[in-house]
Length: 113
Image 1 (cartoon, rainbow, N blue to C red):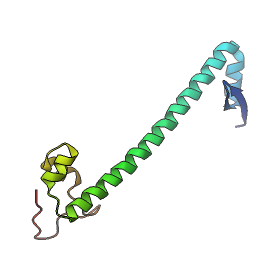
Image 2 (cartoon, rainbow, N blue to C red):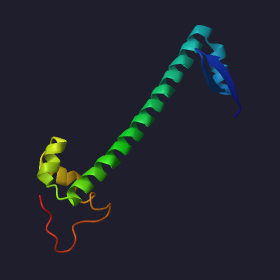
Image 3 (tube, rainbow, N blue to C red):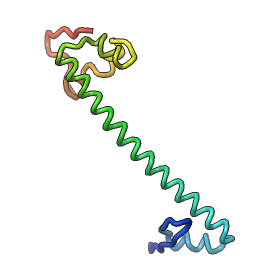
Image 4 (spheres, one colour):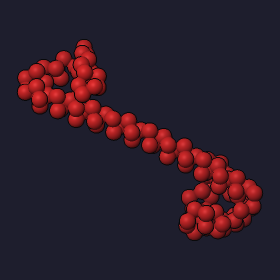
């Protein structure tokens, strides 16, 4: 389906021929408002994608920090205190993942809580 580009409120938007037919059949002010609303929704979807990538990156950084702290001998209680939670909650969230994605405690290993 062909797309036509037009500029609305300083934004270039792509319209399909069907979109164009609909916008031409209604009042120009309403059509422009509909396009502006779609541009705004697209902008916020982009903001959401950027925020999710930021959270995912921060989560990875936090997991690495917990893994490093645990490797250095920091207790789960101390990790929890730094995170504003209990050691048990920190262990539940990071316990196995801090060692590696699919790993659990090594056979016979007692995990300090």
